[in-house]
Amino acid sequence: MKRWISLAVAVIFCAGLAAASYAASLDELQADKAKVQAYIKLLEKKKAAGKNVSSQLKGAKARLATINEQIAEAQPGPRMAPAPMAPAPVVRPAPMAPTYVASAPQYTIAGRAGYVGGGIGVTGTIAMPTILNEVVNALGLNQIGIGNAGLAVGGAYISGRNSAGTTLTYPVLLVDGILTLYAEPGYSVYAEGGLNFPVVVTDGTVGGQVAIGIDWAVPELGGTVFGEVGTGIFRRSTAGSTGFGVLVNAGYKFAF
Image (cartoon, rainbow, N blue to C red; front, side, top):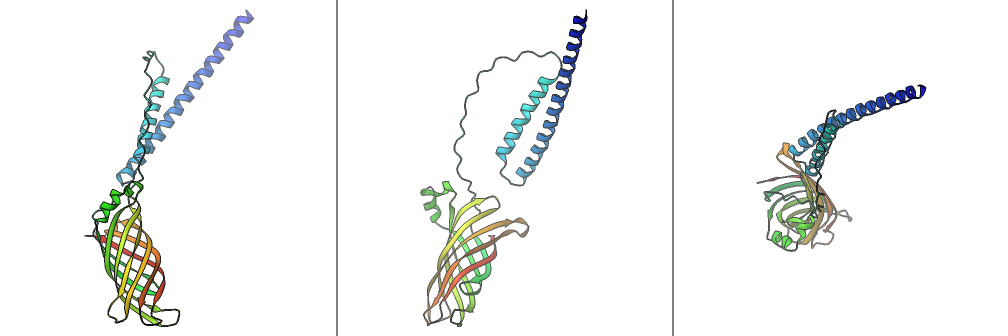
């Protein structure tokens, strides 16, 4: 008799543990579901703001579907045995090309100011697309994130002193090539370089400049702000009148 009583107590104890485990498991699944639903709402807001979160959103929705299935299986009541399923085919994702975001339109007006080749300078340019875009695409450079080859023409006014203490003034014409090196929605990294020629002087000779820059779209301003660093030389044939040094510029540009 004592043996049967002990057996009954053991059965009741095990049943209680199973019920507690079931309740805890179901509560955990419901909690996970709430977290995933909140995460999906956050990703949808980011997607509406222009962020590239498609893969994260797809993964979160798949996780939500799995949790819903687990909750359904954990619910009490009779369930039919699932039909045998064929093994899912192995899908290998296609290799993804590096992110490249082309800016459009490509005609822009830019103004910048900063430390330019030994003096303080202000610069204004107009940038335009060129046939170099076709060359970039033909070489496949756009597949590694390089693109938007353009041409910028404009002018600058530079004033400062060289290492000999001579005051330098350089009204110059500029012709620059521009190449986007990497881009994401909202910002890009670019390289810019070309030639310059002093004007309104009789001793001007050809110089050059090169810089690396980054720009950020600012919708509230209706355009883009940017900063760039590099080096340049602005030359006049008169002895002691050559400016050479670091370029550090900041500016604003807008499309038209």
